[in-house]
Length: 81
Image (cartoon, rainbow, N blue to C red; front, side, top):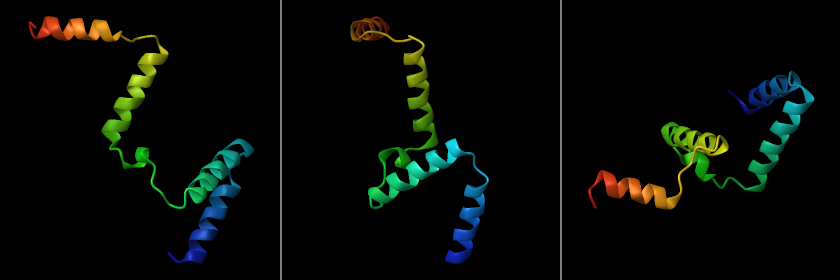
């Protein structure tokens, strides 16, 4: 696909978006261009790692967390330490 074809395809896809999505895509593009191609660590993670992080965030949002001392106690109990 030539550069001209890519631009036309992008334009057509952008033209179908509602204003909220246009602003979101605009922000993503501007952020990408401002970083001058420096990869975001998130993009370097595997899908499994991303899913694990998102699962953890969801658990925290639901109040499903343990304190450090509870985690230590569980490990000590499990490993007879």
